Length: 265
Image (cartoon, rainbow, N blue to C red; front, side):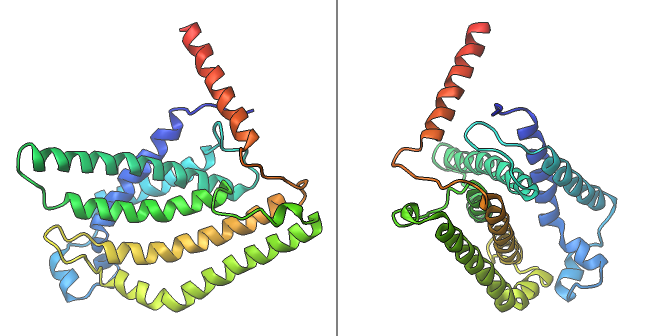
């Protein structure tokens, strides 16, 4: 039974984004506290204090609670593996990031073209958030099986050959992820520890955060691909038409449910 969106689909991802955003901006204070900071970072940042640790605890708590409570809504299928909840929760966080991104861009357009007072931070902040949205959306797409797949040959294969193709596909994703981490870990680690920034007036730590995030999300996508393989192993063969009948049924169900609520209201 599919459910409609609820308040928890917004509250926990929003709280997680707030805590994580704070940590990303003030994380150099943790680097100083741990003794990993170079002279430039140590001279510009104090060690982490109680507020920093409170936000760290908040990020961990909202992440854990959000994952535990994450569930599918209309059009998202069902939760088939424990890791699905991780991808669903991060997908919800991505959706909230899109809302923030649109708000920042709208604000910049208004102050730039109406009041002729452009900001120094909106463009870089939008770029920073867009990078995270792009990466996190890939994990959500993998969980939903909505990434690009070509079914022309796959649909006519017998089930045992489909399973073989699924194994090869998942193996290639895992090998690619491991190769990326192996080849880029040192660079990402160096950018993170020296907290490399963007070099603009706003100077956000885009290289320091996005480079490690790329490697982390690639690993998460590979894990999700393996869980998808396990979840799909015993399923009956699927045939993919031009129109997804299940998606159409979900949309009809959603419309009927909304109409019923309006009539009751």
